[in-house]
Image (cartoon, rainbow, N blue to C red; front, side, top):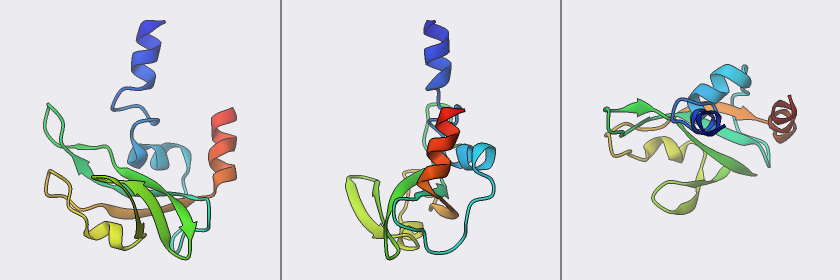
Amino acid sequence: MKSAIISKYSAESPQRNPARCIRTHFRPAFPGIPERGAFVFYDCLCPSKDGPVNWGHCGISLGDGKVIHAWDVVRIDGYTEIERLTALTGDHPKYLGWVPLDRVLAQKQE
């Protein structure tokens, strides 16, 4: 039981890796301005004890191109403005696309 919990929430699991999650579960993602309530995904290298890892970044669309997400604090940015943020690795998030909430919820039920 303990190993199942640990593996479910490890850095490499889709639940903790937005970039991998979108490639594995939500392909294809939609390009362009995310609709309200959609999950918005980015590629991004993040620091780890073993060196940079692509844990990615994600947020939730508020509509009109705005995304609420947690970077250094919970904040609201334009979905393209997020690409200008700098991670501790020096990397910048790269927009992958968005997925409607109903598709995320359907995946959770499988």
